[in-house]
Each structure stands twice: as structure tokens, then as C-alpha cells.
Image (cartoon, rainbow, N blue to C red; front, side):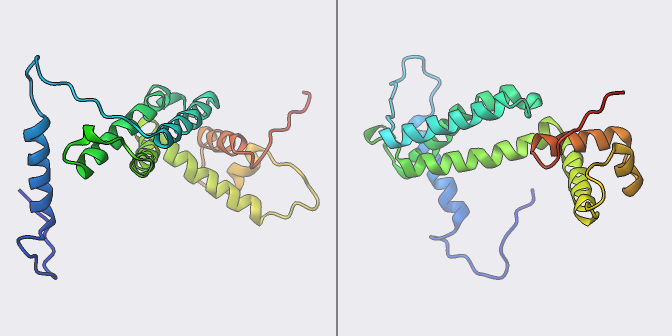
Amino acid sequence: EFILQNTCLPTHPKLDPMLFYNSKISEMLKRNFTQDKNREIRTVNVTPEAYEHVKDFEKCIKQQIDSGMYLPMQSFLSKAHGAAVRLALCIHAWNNPTPEERPITLEEMVAAVSLMEVIVEHAGSAFAPEHVQTCTDANEILKWIYRCDWTERRAFTDVDVRTAISGLTKKQCHAALDLLGQHNYIRQYLEAG
């Protein structure tokens, strides 16, 4: 087992963060964990402001799903607001030994939504690992666009891009150009013939 310890600063036994964390988790599990079917069901409420915040997050996620840009992770995104509420409950339970006695606050919900936004960002790489490469390629294309003199010409082709940026395959180029188009950096111009 590998345990990372801060060797520069001495830890005081009463202030050791891992001891505190383990103690807190043990306390929460003793009170709440059971597999008894006849257990007491506790309900935790949410303040109106916290509820409104998670509903706004849900609307934002729905807009992202509807944009069609996140097809590989559409089902994951559709559950993100629910995961944010569960994270808010975890934060609330950490802050309150008896969480059912007071509602989840706006501050706890904001913290949970912020965590979920980071999780969604990382999930993008997990659901579409090629997206990371596409973003890198799109940045290279943008750098090339900014370096070019556009006073005499107003357009370029994928061949122009692949000639300017070595090692870029046709498939990579098209994926990166599509991404730039989706984010309104460029617009595709179609000519007859």
C-alpha cells in the first residue's frame, strides 16, 4: 500500500486530515448504512434557491444535449443534474450530522454543480477519447488561420490546411474543421460543382 505523506510539515494527531476524514466517514456510515429492508427512511429537503439552481443546471445540460455536439455522452449528460443532487446530499450530510433536520442549501448545491461540471468535462475524454486529439488539431488550425494573411483571399480548403500542418490526416482535419464550425470559428462555404 502506498500512502503519500507530507514529509515537510509535521502532522498533529488531532488535526491529521486523513484521521478526520476516516472518523467522519465512519460516523456517517454507522448512522446511515444498513441493508435492513425495514429501515427508517429519512427525507432531506432542498431550499427553493438550491432547487432553482439545479433546475437551471438541468436546462443548461439539456441545451448541450440538444446541440448534438455531445452524442457519445448523451445518456451520461441526461443524468448529470441528478448526480449533482446526490453530490449536494453528500456535501450536506458531511456538513450536518443529522442531514434530514435541515434542507440542502444553495451553497451546497452550487458546490455540487461545480463538481459535476468538472466531472462532465473529464467524462468528455472518457466517452470520446479522440475528442482530445480533435481539440488539439483544431487549436493548430486556429493558430494557422491567425498567422495567414486574409487580405487577398477569404477562404481555404481542407487541402490547404493539411499542406500547412504536417502530419494531419484527412480524417483528423475534417473532425477539427467540424469542431471549429460547431463553435462558430469558421463557416463552411459550399460551391456548385
